[in-house]
Amino acid sequence: MQVFERREKLSPKGSGLLIRPGASRILQSWGLGDAIEQVADTCLPILIRDLKTGKDKIRTLPASFTKYPDWGIHRPILQDILYQHAVHAGAEIIFRSSVEDFSDEPGVSPSLQLKGGKTIAGDLILIADGIQSRLRTKVLFDVSAGWSVNPQVSDSVYYGVTVPQKELQSDSDARLLLQEFETCVWAGDERFVIGRKPRKMEFWSGLFGLKHDDDHASMWSEGLSQIIEDIGVLHILLLSLPYLSVSVISRFWEDIRKPRVERIKSFAAWNTQRFLGHKDHAASHQKYADADWESIKDIEPDPAADFTSPAFFKWAHDYDIVEQVSLCHLGSSALLGLK
Image 1: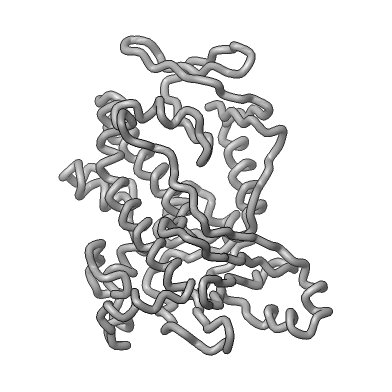
Image 2 (image 1 turned 120 degrees about the horizontal axis):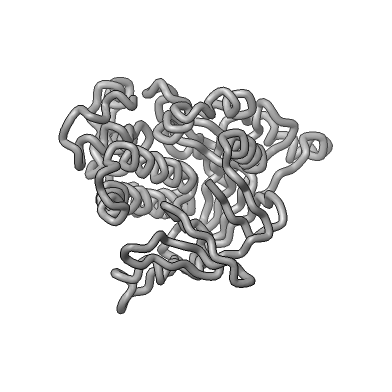
């Protein structure tokens, strides 16, 4: 396996990451659980406070509804873990390699063209060149005609920061941030702050969000987990359906993943609006009693349920890709041995 990276070295951008239980169970199945557990915190559900008063604004959700962890981890640390394990597994990470184009013709192995003209052939090529991908339109040629496949750029501005603990301790107001180990959102009018003091690290990690004129919020706190699920589903399909062509498998993969990602995206957009103080969203939702949340382990997950419901919360965070692949396409117990 070869990975082509245009940068000269590992170059993490951003600070904290959340790895939801549906994704952490996948990482554990890949043998990464112990390494991540040593440096990650197991996060309780996010606290949401009023930005002006500091008082609790939205109910705290249950801390335990799944046996899989909800991890919080510093981005550079996770990137280093993934890099080290990939190299140990035999992957060749080639830095300063810019992919200019690719070829995928019938009867011929797909290939990449690197900057400078070098061509590399492979059995399977995954193009993951980021949000500003130059190759996305070509990859999605069958759906891009007449449609834009480029991401909608948000007008909301996010500033991620990591501050050494000793600097916060020297300021009487900032020192209060160190009292909150759990992830906390201070929600205000058209702005919010997210912060967390990692238990295993000597710094405070946070993000500031400012709202302008935008209704297409990013998948805050969900992007990494959805990517891990994407790869996990593709891995299962490739292992279980070796007799099918990659094009057929990719269709199966899209049928399984797209509905979930679209629903999570809608949830994240709604959630961000809630953080920005848009009260009109909460008013239209059903209220759920404490007993409903206390019995969440016995509730059937439901993607179509209300965003504030225990059934939706469980579907969003306690997602089993093996079960979903089996239910969606295989219709047999062939995959159950992969659990």
